[in-house]
View 1: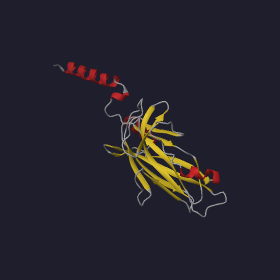
View 2 (view 1 turned 90 degrees about the vertical axis):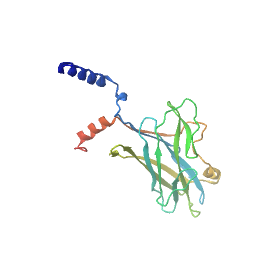
View 3 (view 1 turned 60 degrees about the vertical axis):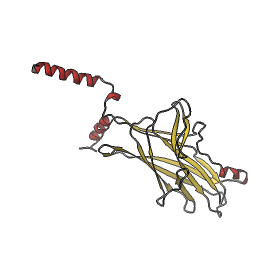
Amino acid sequence: MSSVRVSSVVILVLLFLLALPAGAHADEVRYSLGTVQEDRELRVVPGGTVTTTVAFYNIDGNVPTMVDVSVVEAPDDWLVMVERPGATGDDSGVVSLIVEPSAPQTVAPVCPGQESESVWLVPRGFVCVDVVRVRIELPAAAGGGTQGTVRIIAVARWQTEVGVAPFPQEREFVFDVREAGSSDAAESYVDVAPKPDGRAPLLLAGGICAGGLVLLRRLLAKSGVLA
């Protein structure tokens, strides 16, 4: 085969590869994290406990998302913990989980274990979310209209073939907590975790989504992060 013919074949192959849609390229990596915050305002009686949840899903990415969840702000005399359902948090006060890529379903899926629940994401469909419970206990001496702010931070990272992706992302969850009156006492003990019946979450915090790895590297290079 002449060199001219070989060159023509190579050019045709390159043109074919360039004509493929972006999703067809094998080196495309999509990073994604979606979150659900069920409550922003909570009520609890002095000496009582209230539990709410934050949850995580990954339906637009193809890379597992590593998430560390921790309490970064709370009144000094309150006990605030983050924990996985069916387990207690470690001494560090950090809950670590890996959110695997998944796809929305038209019917509620059966989610594995106690640590995931099925919820309805409008307009995408049903998805299994990884649940983290937030437990807040007020001291018995609290009173006189006690109120405070609890802030939870989730730090997301992505593992690639060459190491951890260079752009960790943070998601913040803020809860306004106040003392409940006697008529609200029962509410302090209600478990408000997302239920497997697929009811819509009250508050979606949206998703963190980065494009393909090639585009990411170009953007980082332009910003001076990459040499």
